[in-house]
Image 1: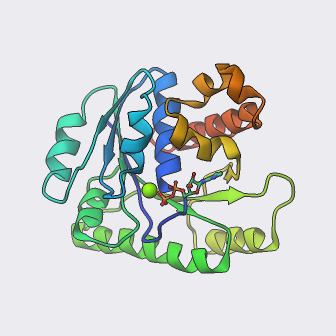
Image 2 (image 1 turned 180 degrees about the vertical axis):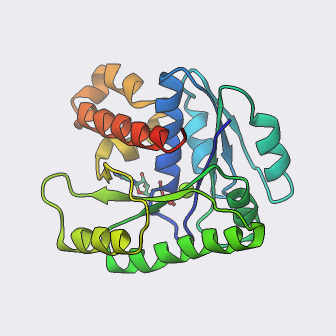
Image 3 (image 1 turned 120 degrees about the vertical axis):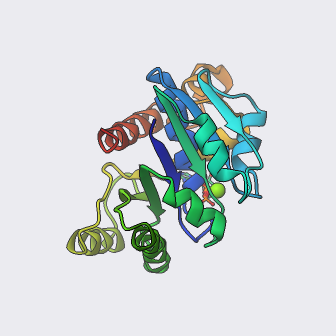
Length: 222
Ligand SMILES: Nc1ncnc2c1ncn2[C@@H]1O[C@H](COP(=O)(O)OP(=O)(O)O)[C@@H](O)[C@H]1O
Ligand SMILES: [Mg+2]
């Protein structure tokens, strides 16, 4: 039943990456996942063209007039719907947010991204006001450094906490395996089994990160 929507008016923050990781990990947990590619840049469709993980299906080129009916038709018992959006504020984005059980707002720990991220949170608030109900939402920090937290990241976490915004732990660390996934298709486990890929980066660490992130999201759907 849950509908998870990735939203941020900024491009390049990690919406599509979050969508791919959640779809793959929920499918590995046994869920029947449908991903809606609502972004004209078609990141998700490109990923899918290299092969979808078992348990994941994709609806591509979902536009403003299709988004609600497609969400409704994909939704059902034991199913998870994941909506990937373009980095804009639009009627399509608003419609998707208004049908979400959980909105995930990815943010990079830079001052500029934090500002734009707060616009994404404002977008959720507008929908909440229009519908006179609350829409669960949470921020996830993306492309963070693996070793030590940057000063900006610490400050941003503090700001979010003070504002009472739900922050998903762990953040998604900057890892080559996450970006390679788009060109490779499938999920991190298939990539791990490929002898040509194993030597490349730390896929195991990326996989652990993706799993812990997915579990944290799962907790918010209960
Ligand atoms: N955690 C990460 N580690 C490494 N690269 C990342 C990570 N998150 C995103 N990227 C890369 O950054 C770029 C933008 O990410 P993407 O998920 O497409 O953002 P959006 O959908 O918000 O535009 C892509 O090239 C993607 O591969
Ligand atoms: Mg995208």
